[in-house]
Length: 335
Image (cartoon, rainbow, N blue to C red):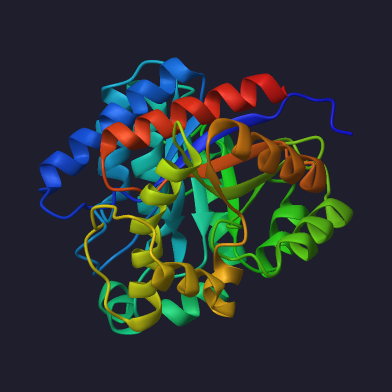
């Protein structure tokens, strides 16, 4: 049984709901982060995506600064920055600026290997994207070098990053990044809120291969789950319909704004039973507080995760905030 305290945090894509502007979306993201701070969440992460009209987090570091400016204590960061899209030097400068004088000890740098977009857009962002993706371990080394004080004697420097404490996290949706996180002694965040197939293998690889580092003495596992909680099971199922339609859009290539919830219908129930959809939503905990508490308890016991990353993709910000409030109550009770 797990006896240590399990942290709980938020991953957000700044999803745009139907009828909402980007400005409203960003204001809602800030409001959520402010509430999360009062609910006891450890961190609020934003994920980099491109060429998606329903996702507002493409300029990830800018949005991180906006949220950090409007909050006081919660950690704010990337879940993640897709490093092959960028020059390691520029990322070090951006996050060194954020985590240095502006918001010290509050900025996280989560790094991923995927493009966060389609192939054509990845090529438009960086023509040598595939080479950069294959060079991810070396690009990670460059980031760490730019943040080190020792780099002060080098010809190429990220002067605003040298000696700045910005923790680096490795993100993964397969087993590849588990090896890298273990080898470098870095915390590992697995995207089990959508990539469920390799969760157990990835965690096992990471823990078995982990090598202590100056950053981390022992393995630190973070696991993503979809969380939709309402006052009743029926209301949570109604809110869930927005996420189901979003998943259908992903599979059919017809991505759209987050749709208002509807009553759960037999057609939507059949969609959930589809093998691909069912697998993708395997770690989706939907229901009242008591229903979700039992599911989360089992997940925590099975994974022994050090931190749970909650993803709540529903239409209305008030419902999102309420869901996150109830989830925080669950985590406090389970801890």
